[in-house]
Amino acid sequence: MRRMNVGIIGAGNIAGVMAKTLKGMKHVNRYAVAARDLERAEVFAKEYGMKKAYGSYEELVQDEKVDLVYISTPHSHHFEHAMLCIDHGKPVLCEKAFCANAAQAEELFRYARGKGVFITEAIWTRYMPFLKTMRDVLESGVIGEPKMLSANLSYQIDHVERMQEPALAGGSLLDVGVYTLHFAAMMFGKDVKTISSVCTYTEKGMDEQDSVTLIFEDGKMAVLNCSMLAIGDRKGMIHGTKGYAVIENINNFESMTVFDSNHKKIAFYKRPKQISGYEYEVEASLEAVRKGWLEYPDIPHEETLRIMRQMDEIRGQLGVRYPFENSEGV
Figure 1 (cartoon, rainbow, N blue to C red):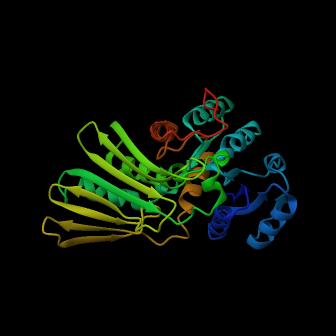
Figure 2: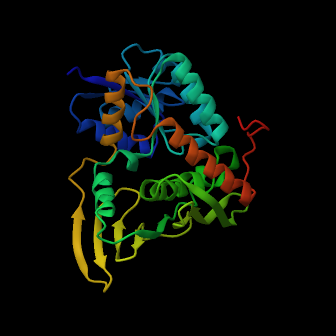
């Protein structure tokens, strides 16, 4: 199998994790990185063993040897940078949240389809093999019929610029809360009937702590909490008629523990050994590129759009709007 070249747009912390992950993967080259200035790209390339360093994103997408581009810039710039990749026929793995809003995502998917270019959202939990284990446990009936779900994800990251700035699509929802929405979708499906949300606000009007409740058509309920102010337990809990399950770290699944109706531990499942967890989304993207797919089955475009629309609705309820959004959303 030919080794494929991955290029990275952006040279921040997340890009560094990706570069380290690529080093441990087979059939993949840590090929190129692009930053807003050449010096920063060169420092990154030297640190992580990248072959090429570019001082502009345009130079990277013009490199004919790049097989896949990973976009790690802030949410506010995903649309622009993904469009640039598609313009040059480069397959795209774009960090979450996929875009700032659903209108941007719809336009990106439409443009990519027209150009025949693969693009997918880098919501890494969707690609993890442990997800199948979790679903199999629920489908086995060991906790009875699942009725309620809770998910908590919080980090003390309010000092980070992208979290505070409206122009960077700041706030807790797109950066942290997106994982809780995907977790609820992966466990309970897509038939959401109603969404209710509340939050507290930063001085610049961004959501800093969010609580979202989803009611599903079949009566299931999901209560989701996220924060950029505090350290959270990262747990997900699924409550059934015969017991419950606890998932450690909904942001990078570590284990699943099953309890019966007497709160007795009856089963424990641990995730397989991994490099970082990023490798699964890269493997999936490269598989799609090799097979000529335009989207990946485990996270089809419509599912990314559905979650983006949920976040649009939540922001509408909270009154959170980004300064670059026009009436069409793009």
